[in-house]
Length: 177
Image 1: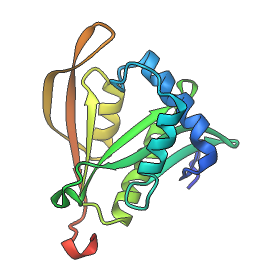
Image 2: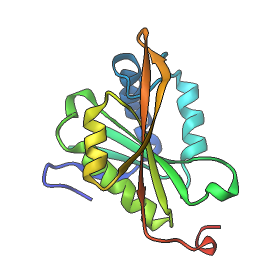
Image 3: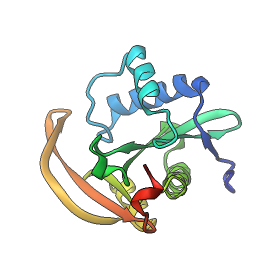
């Protein structure tokens, strides 16, 4: 999928891991979008790739002119079978590409992927001060369902997290074994 802004969204491949690592480690050091406090070593990124790169937990990248400028993925909420129709979405954008529609393009792609694999509920846990992400999710139909007060700690202060959800088409249990 390519947008009018020239952003192409596609499934991630092994060759995207360096860009994914760079984007995520920058977010760790400069934002509260993630509550990790130390950059990930390469071995952890490889283990993450091996754990998450499967048809029921898709990883997408956004690229412009062959350069990865963002990534997003769906993660199981729990290994318990009753959660099999629910995924959490995660999105990170290169600092130079924030505010240029990359997040919307990726989140739209994730929602499409969730429908394709038979997901009923997509959730997001967003740091309460991340107004841009909250507004993005709201604009695509997510609703606020609660806030955990002082759930995290980063950069010397306590942080709240907003919980949002998007209910998709009904899925029958036999559709997603």
